[in-house]
Length: 299
Image (cartoon, rainbow, N blue to C red; front, side, top):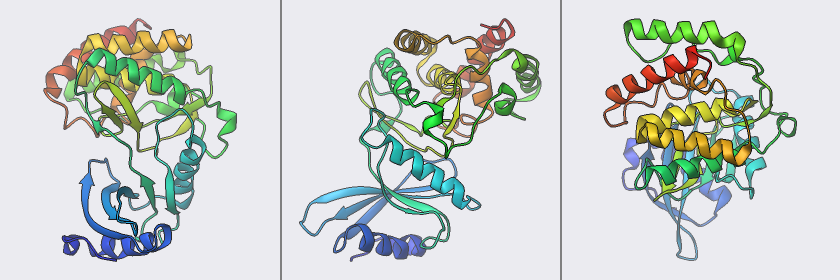
């Protein structure tokens, strides 16, 4: 097998990749890689020439140091359950929960089409994301016993949010004061880490959800609140409302306290993914103006 031309930059990736390809595609040759955006995991898109001469791409994910065997198995188990279903998630080609090859738990995945971000019609993109989340939430919690359960709002209330000074205190106070009012009525599969790097699209259509490290059983509003905030910050308030309306129409679910869940997402899945958003400070200010007022009035 030929190693990539920039192999010196990461000897462990090169040596581990040789072992992985020998297991999943004997005789294949890797001839380059591209680092992909991620929030702690090391993720690379590997270009591979198969013995037949065709070229394919696989994704190598090396989980953060400290990831437990159980956590790595949970991610792999979730992706296996999503396989060939309606949710656009990658297939697992290889899983090393013990970190034998790379020194940390890792997996090889199929590559999904699409790129992060909104390229065209923001309203159509939002409607597509709503439909994708509705498909995710078709999975009842009892079908996913390998995932942790989140049963109360207090369990998703963050200790900090990425906003400065008085605004952070306001957000945390609203989250703390209104958490007892947010009842969890369903247990469904929840992605749990929606953000700019985990939603892929081509044109107006969502083509993939990646980074399933936050998957759990819980209230679907965990995802919808995060998606509403994400859409507001990347595509504007009109698109965010289009997402909310499309999801409610598709599922019939009540989306009470959605602003509360959006604020909570700022302190969890969205908090470490804001840097790449255009004009993020102004958009975040406008979102906070709306969300703080809405959460305080239980909207």
